[in-house]
Amino acid sequence: MANLGGPISTEPRINERIRVPEVRLVGPNGEQVGIVSIHDALKLAQEADLDLVEVAATARPPVCKLMDYGKFKYESAMKAREARKNQAHTIIKEIKLRPKIDPHDYETKKGHVVRFLKAGDKVKVTIMFRGREQSRPELGFRLLQRLADDVQELGFVESHAKQDGRNMIMVIGPHKKKAEAKAEKAAAKAQRGSEETSVQEG
Image 1 (cartoon, rainbow, N blue to C red):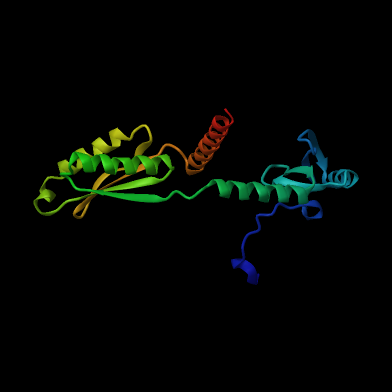
Image 2: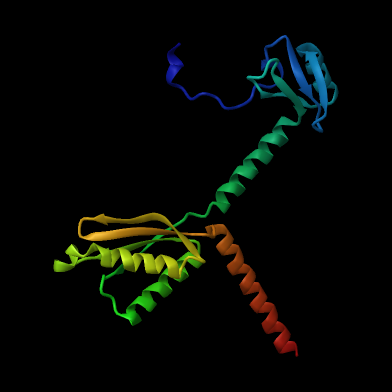
């Protein structure tokens, strides 16, 4: 019993490793065969040149399916890889504002927030208070609220404004996932390319 700390295998039991008297058998195309003895299930698997794979070990009796286990493992690995690829990492961008920001500056900073959200990134908005401004937190709240309202079509307040020492912080998350934003950008680029081609042809 020395290997107690070893990893628990997540591999399903297959073929002879399934040690139960009977199983609920599912055919290769998902059809219900019913409850059969393990001996018959293994025989059917052998005849069909397939593996008997335990898909629900905790069921009574366990559910087993006839399948090509090597192919199933390969396809599962490919799906997992694809899912990881599409989970493009969300990056947190940061924008810093002063409570008494002038309108032109505000528009510029808002433009950055819009661009980040469109790209599928989160934005951490920090209001920096200096000196006496610290006694007027409502200025920061109002500014953050205004920004959240201005960009609500692209993002939502993921973490509400809260005081953090001299600063006030709010996080705005994008409505669009990073992968969607990437796909849309690629589609728009392709669209522009085809428009340019047709203009040249015309």
